[in-house]
Length: 209
Image (cartoon, rainbow, N blue to C red; front, side, top):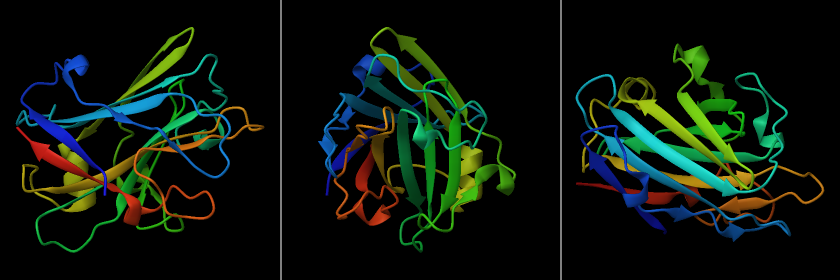
């Protein structure tokens, strides 16, 4: 199982250059197009409304396809970066997982469930779309996401997040020019056909100060 260290910080003023990168560098299912991509995650334990998960995903890709503009549109049909994750209190029953999928606009598709067939939009659970911002240059695009502690508490039924919290997930790159579909991931998915909804293949996130 792959592992990624998630730093516990006290401020959302994040120096991303000092944060470890999880490379999205495993491409399966006859992916001939393999753009360079990666992801970074920290947890800010600030004790106020700024507390939560902060993630940064990026891809070296000129002119990414970005057709969709409304929340929960099928952005996976565009050039898309995705962050799937779950959290559990120590010894608790296994939770479902959140999927955050974003194109470069950025437009997001965000849901919760235990597999690909029982996804529920988080907005239907009374949770506002997460704050997501983006940046583009001629050859690269970046996504910055914030998942507040309040949403984690409501979805995963946890009271707080610390070093003992069980945290796991995966990062993906898909979509773009549909003649050359890329299926990229950080933690390898053991499936003969394309399927990112595989929590059994998530890598482990280690929370540490």
